[in-house]
Length: 292
Image (tube, rainbow, N blue to C red; front, side, top):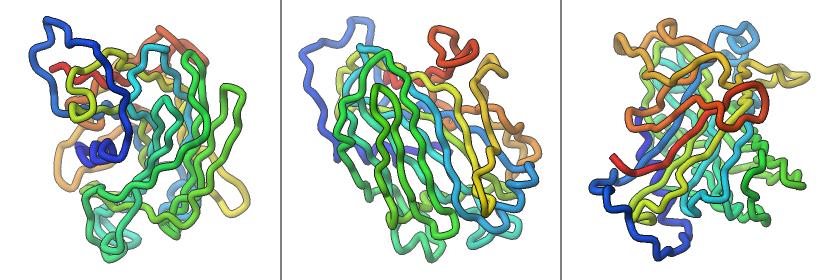
């Protein structure tokens, strides 16, 4: 489940230099960190129909960062259609990814698929599209991000950003979704992600300002007449984020709780916190701190 492919995007992004020196106690850094959480949805009756004939879907959620956030950190959302091993729509274990994220300068990036993906071959994430959203994001402000995609055509549709006095949608129509890795779950599902990441290539000194907060995540699918919500969570229903329970291969979805957030990889630094929240009493903090 580890997604080192995300860090390839950093080669396409500019980073602000800093004269800050590493702290004396910082002795060892990870090469990169992808602090990502994942939640599964699979049992809802409407979703079951959708998984048999996929169409439009979306993930939305709110993010927040403080003024200290480092400029190289990338943060955002992702929705994926896992076809599963049993009776896949196209290919056994295929994982169709609609991921997009921002840095605080308002640069949007998203990975796109290759022709090999449509033939059933997963590929490393090496093709990236980047868009300047035309607005610098404000600290101490809740922004709502929505990614819409088409799991029938296997294409992006759009990304919308609301907050800080803006409400802007960028069309991504025609850009293909990527199939980045084989995902050996027994049944089909939709998965949602919130993440923050960085790498030593652009932050060799691990400049402080690591944390991005997420709240009120929602996933929905199109029923033919309207979108229906199939996951909605504000991080009030769990105290910690644990590992995905893997008891066998193929991985039984029945062993994985829905509406629960798991570590997407073992290095992810995630915390359910009440330090800030958009609603309710909690939010999810994703820390892109490279320190071991």
